[in-house]
Amino acid sequence: MADVWRRTRPPALSTAVTDDAELVSRARPLIEDGVRDRVSVVEIDNGLEREAHFGSSGDASFEIGSITKAMTGMLLADAIDRGEVAERTRLDELIPVRGSGVAAVTLGDLACHRSGLPRLSSRTRDALGAAIAVAVRRDPYRADLDGLLAQARAAAPGPPGRMAYSNLGGALLGQALAAAAGSGYAALLTERLLAPLGMIDTYLPVTKDGIRPGALTGYDQRGRPAGPWTMNATAPAGGVRSTPADMARFARAVLDGSAPGMSALAPRWDADGDGRIGYGWLTNRIGDRTVTWHNGATGGFASMLALDRDHRRAVLVLSNTAAPVDGAAVALLMGPISPR
Image (cartoon, rainbow, N blue to C red):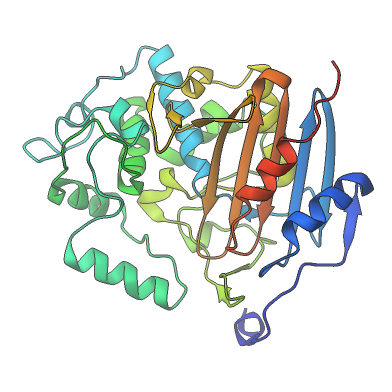
């Protein structure tokens, strides 16, 4: 690790390219600008899967960031299907926040970012600690469950009903679902989503000690090495690590409708711009197509999963630098539609 942190030259997009040459030729112009290092691209088109890896491989381990929220949303939909909770279940029915400003916040509002909660804890000590962590390229989400609950009880939500993206809300949703199931969040995610889909290389490390060997090092947008984000109790909002192969399994299951909690993808409320949002999943009309998606960004990684469910298409882009990959994924998704 010491050698990695002494590195001063920004990385460049790897020239060690493997897998589908045609996808490589389409993807490279979309990702070669900016600070890049290792990038994996997966395209699923009506059952045909292509991969392009730039210095990466199907089993490389990336931080997927807030794509985790889409998974947490599916856990909510699955818990509703099981009769454990309802969309209108209040937080204080599941976790010890009674008497606080967040007591009446519902699970549905958390999943759709309509709770009025701030993006992060607004307590001065939390905001200052997070700012320092970001400045030194460390994980800013260090609170354990007791700390997260203290942040929740101290929060003063604004009026509910309008979308305002909240990592604090995403974390509380995951922890509330875990409490309803009598489980920890990592165990719940594995049992109800990852294991049924065969995603054995996808996991939630929670702390640095939980990171498996071989995990990629991330780089910020200036190309400086960044510490891993494991996010502790905030992990339901963005702490998952996964591989291109596992995320391809996830995308296929979402496209064919076999993944648990599929109703999470249904648009329910207005989101930013002309978009709509379900339980974590966002939907936009782009041209004549409907795109369902979620992206992710940590201190050293960027990710994007975009789906055209009507045409059974999906594109996944994973990168170990923080430079966004959203545009590349959408551009690839909007390519010609293959005949069925």
